[in-house]
Amino acid sequence: MSIFCLLWVPLFYLFRRSFTMDGGSGVWALILGSITAIVQFFLGYFVNPGGFGHSRVIFGFIDIVSVPVLIPVFVYFIILLFKRFSAQIDFANFALLWLIPVGALKALSWSSTNDPILLVMTPLLWTALASGISYFISLMINNFKWYKAVFFIPFLLILPAAAAVTYWAFFSQQEEIGFALLVLTNIPLLLSVISGIRHGR
Image (cartoon, rainbow, N blue to C red; front, side, top):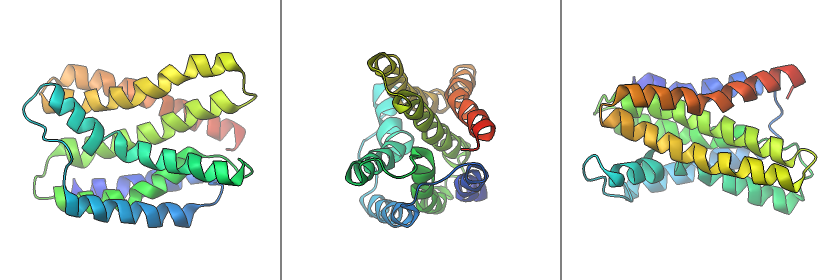
């Protein structure tokens, strides 16, 4: 399972890169991702997860699943602002590259637990979030209209929350809810792959 945690994100990135353009900034993604991984490795978790309640969901959101993906998405947005959105826009490839060193250090630190939720489920949720968020942003900014923002912004908010609840459901041994949410969080990923293959991006 540690091998899966180590290799899933880079392999998914290579698969996605086969039909997309990364728009540059790949070196920065790897450098900043490495710095983030090292800092978190030494600082540890920011939230005390407690038991099975709300604190576990918040812990999953901040320390495990959602924030590790939202940080590179935000950084990439800042980079695009400086570039005035002149580059090929692809939030997912930037976030996936960022997550490669994060996944490597997590595989190392989580290997002693041998926990499939951390070593298997978490990398799956990372790629689902990175691809899904990028997909919704692309739909929103393509021929931008105000009503697109009204429609797609809720999806951008719901997806990271759903990923954190997915982590909580599996941790709480509520597998039916967990698998249902896992399927739902991966639907945008599937749509983004289909769209990317069809349009060559």
